[in-house]
Image (cartoon, rainbow, N blue to C red):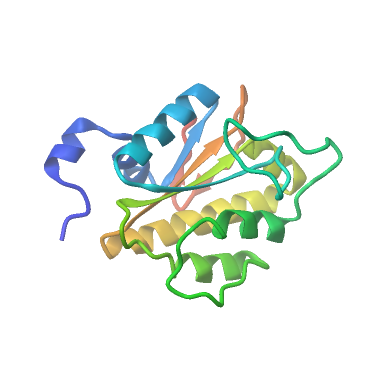
Amino acid sequence: MAVFTEEEEEQGSIDWDVLHDGGIGAFQAVKTLDGAIRNLRERGYGVAEVSGLTSSARPVGAESHPAPANTLHQPAALLTDLLVQVSMRYCGWSAKNLDALCDTLRYIDFSGVTGWVLVLRDFDRFFEADARWAAGAIDVIAQVSREHLMRGHRLLALLHAEGQTVDLGKIGGFEVWWQ
């Protein structure tokens, strides 16, 4: 069973491009990222978002309000904020560490959606707070994305870092290219 049709491949859509290159897409401009998210939503994708500038008690997106500058998310709280927005086939998940993230992402429910998009806005804040964790989380998402793709499911992550790039090196064997 093909995950993408030949027509989708020829159209060169963002999901094809991102999944073709390892499941992780990176954006510098919010406008470009928002356009990609809008396109994916229109095509039936579920979208979960967190931001390095947003308190876990506030919504993410155009209507969000920045948290106080001295407030930093703990890694487990960021993972929980992201995963609580995703439909799961199993409710006993935990996001306390990267191993738990990996296990939990394997239980995503793809019923009723074309695929799932995990959006990490202001990723540079995550990276500055703990570069090893940030790169590890992205590597886990890339690994599980590949596993889901083998089953015919689409899982991708879109990173955003305004005006700068974060050097992640190779994630899942692929270079992350900033658009």
